[in-house]
Image 1 (spheres, rainbow, N blue to C red):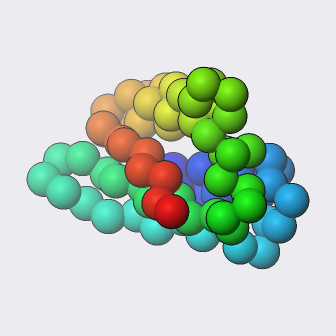
Image 2: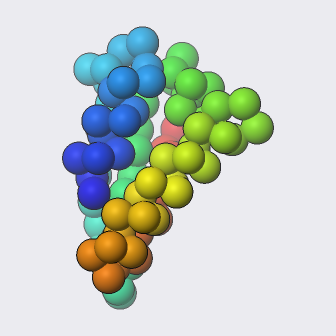
Image 3: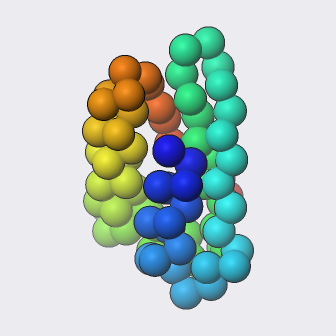
Length: 76
C-alpha cells in the first residue's frame, strides 16, 4: 500500500525525488504518511482536496480487498 501511494504521488509532483511514504501500524489500522516538497503540496491535495480524496479512495479499495484498514496522512 505504501508503494501504491508513493507511485501515485511521484507521478503528480514536479520533484519526485522529494516524495517519501512511510507505513506505521496502530492497532489494526495501517497509517501511511506521505511527505512531499512544500511547493508540490498543492498538487497532492488538489482543488478542494479532490486529488487527496481520490488517493484515499484508491488506498481504501486496495486495503478493503486485503481485509485491512488504511489511512493516508499528508505531512507538511
